[in-house]
Image (cartoon, rainbow, N blue to C red; front, side, top):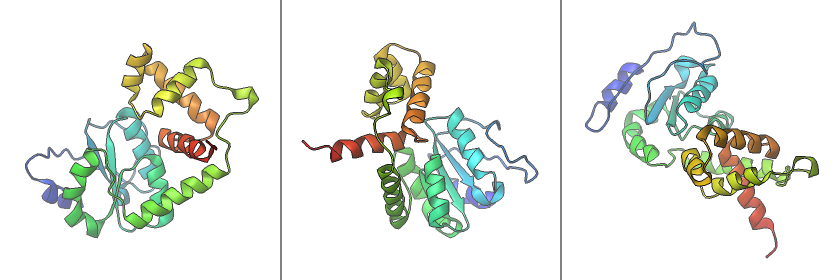
Length: 206
């Protein structure tokens, strides 16, 4: 599969760096050393069952990177799990041969390359989950002024670096506040938090 990736991605505008994972590696790949890149293409079969920890490790070290996962078969459960971890593209091996070169620039530009039916069921699952949660923290976990400022900035869909500049605080402090917000609202990713907030706003009577 690695050889096939090299074949279909050897073209102008793409600088390819490959890294082969050893099957004997420990399950936790969150601390693995990886080269910086705009997009990481993960062969889920070669690192299974380590795919989840690898994606977490990639996004922890390179928060602005985009991840595309290629695997043998995509079920709703597998796809939803990968999307929740932060994957922006999902392809089967058969699809990758033709579609991966087209998926790369789209995903690099901020888009998704996910089967439409999978994306639809994923959004439905997110909305269903959020209906079971309250948007506002309870009285014992009210937001501080700074947390509210960070949340407002998150809703503008700006990066941690931009939030730090806007609020005149360090990027590390922004990450700390974002982590606290995720914990308070009971979500795992900032995208879920943004969706939750907008859902609540749309449900609030004018």
